[in-house]
Image (cartoon, rainbow, N blue to C red; front, side, top):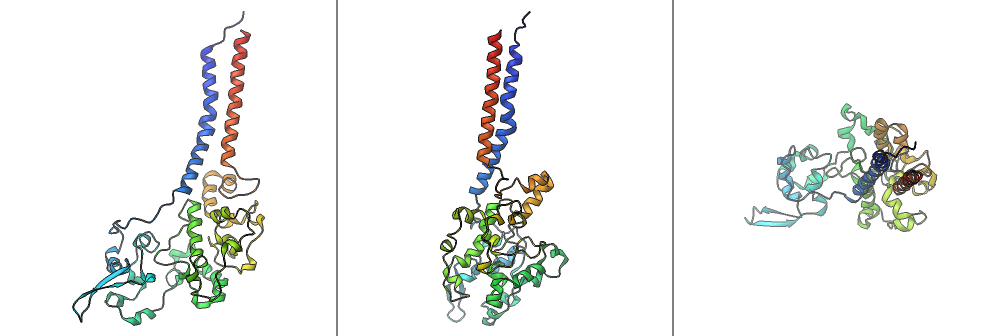
Length: 345
C-alpha cells in the first residue's frame, strides 16, 4: 500500500529549510554589513554652539576664560576712554568649546595648567613667556597613569625624527593640543574614525603649508605625489594611519608608537601589513583584537576583523552572495524533492 504524502509535514520542512539560512546566515550578515557601512558614513560632527556645558566640572570657572578665548572677538572696557572696545582674538588663542568639552582635559580648570595670574584682566604681557607644561609633568611617575606608560612614550618621542630635527621646538603639543586632544584608539570602537582623527594630527602640519613652515624653511612635500608608488592610494589613506608605516614600535607596552622614522626608513613592503604577521595587529587593531579575543576567542579576534590580511579575511559582499547561492541551491533541492514525491504518487 502506497502511503499518501503528508502535505503538512512537507510544508513545515519547506518553511524550516527556507527560514534556517535566512535567520542564521543572511540576516546577521546583512546586519553586520549595514552597521559596518553606517559607522563609516556617520561620523559625528562637533557639538552645537548652543550646547550647555554647565554639567562639566569647573565649567563655570573656565567660562570666565572662554568668554574671550571661546570666540573670534572679545570686548573690554577701556579704563582710559571709559568706552567698550572690541578686538579680534588671535586665531591660535581661540578655544573651541565643542572640542574642549569632549577632550581628555575637559574637567580641568584653565589655571591648573596656566598661571593663576591669568585671572587678572588685562593679562600681563610677561605671561606669554610662561613655559608650557609637558605630558610627564602631570602623567609621569603617577601610579594612576602607569598603565599608559608615558615614560616609554617620552623615550620613543625623543628618538623620533621630529625630536632629532627640531629639538625643543617640537613638543607634545605640536601633535596633541591639550585643549582638544582625546583618546581614540582605546575608546572608539569605530576604526575609521580613529584613522581619520589620527591622520588629521599629521596633516595639521604635513597638509598645511603655514604650519609646516613654522618649523622649517623646506618646501612642504606633496603627499599625493610622494605616495604615488602606493597601490589603491585613496583606499590606503582612508583605511590606514600614517604612523603604521612611519613609526617603529620599540616597546609593546605602548598602544601607539611615537618613534617617527626618517622618510627613507618608512615601510614600503606590502606583506608588512597584508600577512598573518601583520604589523597592524600590533598597532591599529591591537586594542580591538584584544577585546574581541576575550569575547569570541583567538581565531575571531585575530582573523575576523577589519584588517586586510590576504587569504584570511572575510569579504562581506561575497559572504552575502555565497549565502544567497547556498540558500537557492537548498531551496532548489527541496522543491525538486517535493515535485518528485508528488510525481511518484
